[in-house]
Amino acid sequence: MNNVLIIGGRSISRMMLRTLIEENYPGISVSEADCIEQGLSYYAVQEFDGVVLEVNSTGADGLDFMPEIQAIFPSAQIVMLTGNFQDHLQAKAEALGLQFFTKPATLDKVNHFINS
Image 1 (cartoon, rainbow, N blue to C red):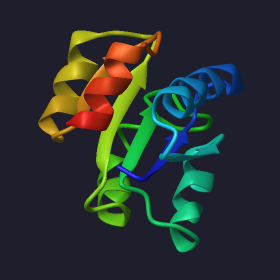
Image 2 (cartoon, one colour; image 1 turned 180 degrees about the vertical axis):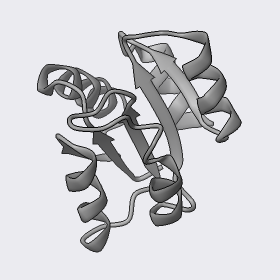
Image 3 (cartoon, rainbow, N blue to C red; image 1 turned 120 degrees about the vertical axis):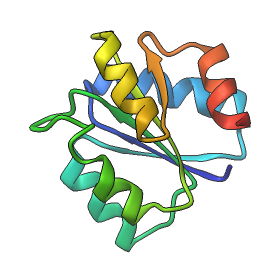
């Protein structure tokens, strides 16, 4: 994995996840988008092989945008991240072929995402 895009969530959550990735995987470039629309616009500038999407992203439910995100980033490893764990969210994410992690982001979760 070379380029990771983190979409949505609070800026502090994105910063913590970015720091975990950059400190443990210095060869990976990390970009942040504060909302889904901004994240989708990044595709015109750069390809990403990893996308972390907050379920409750600014202005939208990340799962509702998943078909569009998967179409734009077809070869990317995508993980849904949420602080609001509910069984039906996990089931929906897994039905879409996504990894599903609950907050907080930890090194173990990052390792699983990067190495899968």
